[in-house]
Figure 1 (cartoon, rainbow, N blue to C red):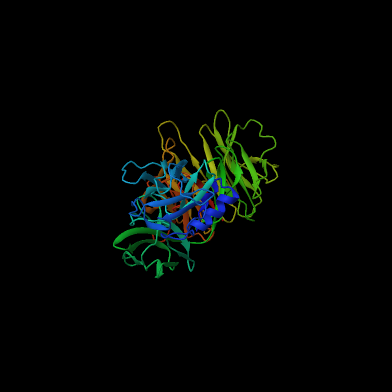
Figure 2 (cartoon, one colour):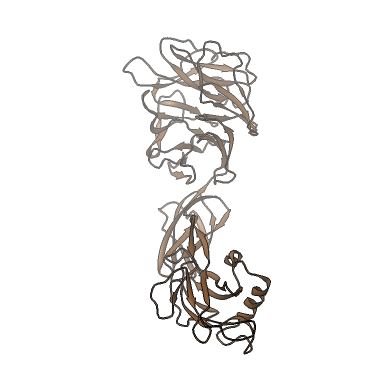
Length: 495
């Protein structure tokens, strides 16, 4: 079989007839006295990459009268294929008895009209051919040969780290290469799982090389192939769809990594938050102003006339979608505002009275009657989380050190214990807003500002400073499960 490298040959119809007649093995392929050029030895060689072939490639040249032609110049040329932008010869050649191999050589026929070339196989596996021409006579033939892959030198398994939903499955994929990058058949694989810490159940079930999510958690898998052991990891995660800031815009994806796409293209866009319908969202643009966007990427300013506001940060739709709460900043300070989704009716949050310090990042209770926001405090004071009634303006409970509060769907408040100058800290949850008591979750890791609750109120999604990945934190147990495909994402929102 001739390979694609033969497309580089320029053969006349007559020469092609000779070439096809010549590819018949190591014995004579023409009747004595037949004019033309024939491969009489060395065609059909096959061995591993880089191996020199013991049998020389021999051609015999006869003139139109069928007489052997001594002293004729014969050119042997190996084709090449592109490898990482470089043309790599599929073989190299040397004169019989020689030691210097070249991609192309020119020989002279002996008294019997024959020319012999030694063949050393190249590093690219495949079915190839040597182009042999006698230019003065217009003859051309081809000597096919096969380069087989060498021994396995590199082994890989994919995916090396992934996420899967409960009762969903994926299949491990294996690739093996020789030292030159040629694919090698992989031996059978055995997959086992590291022990799961008590009292948690095994996150996955394994059948052959198929992995199925069973229980929420994180598993490490050991893949044994031909004496080599590779490790892979998998997170079993709850279902949901995320929005998050990322390189050059706002991205949408499933928690298992599926459907990843950019829905808004804007440098430094951040802090997206879903509207209840899951078909639109609000985010902060790179210029610091808030925008409303659809999943088709169409955007509009949240405030047609922002007045003296120079930034609208961390905009949050209420759970009924009637209001959007945000931190409105002037040159002097910031305060919590709200506005209708169409940009009308903007005002300070009901019950709030501004003072000389910045107070922002408002989110409302599920009932829509209370608001939580951060208060930076005076110079040298820690930033704190404050809860306030929007009906009476009454402060509910003591302020608690923290930043970036998020009121969850079941009534709990999550926040980051961070100073105003920091953008990260421990993840805390206040089960009874107004009590002043909060507990740590997330294995005591630090997380960046910009967190969100799952719709059922069990999970919090946040970006870990330790792994630089988004993680889902199980509030009842404190377990943190990484989302391995989220290295460049931040400020997530969960729908």
